[in-house]
Length: 89
Image (cartoon, rainbow, N blue to C red; front, side):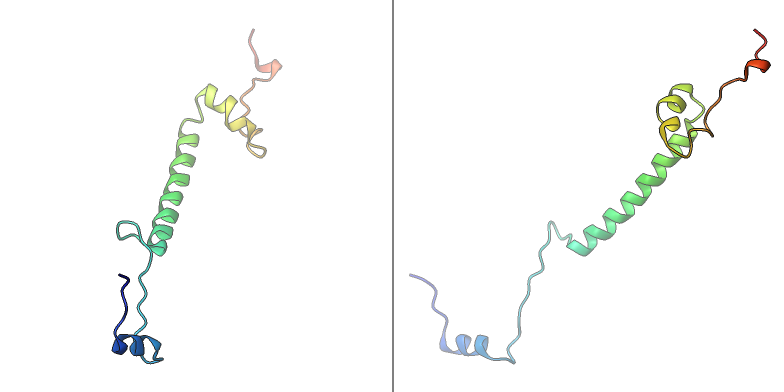
């Protein structure tokens, strides 16, 4: 037997002055705005940590050659070749 609203409830839902209920979508109490704010914050911390790690380990030859010299504007900055006239051998 389907639910049939009472006449009073049906009249209230049809009224322009009746309260309009809205249930926002969320996952475990975390709405879209909260998720967007937390994601933006986590992403900015991740970019900062990744940049720090690359430049911190930039003096390791493998990191310098395989990662940092492939960045278009940083390739000449991280080039550590010794000029032939400065080589003692």
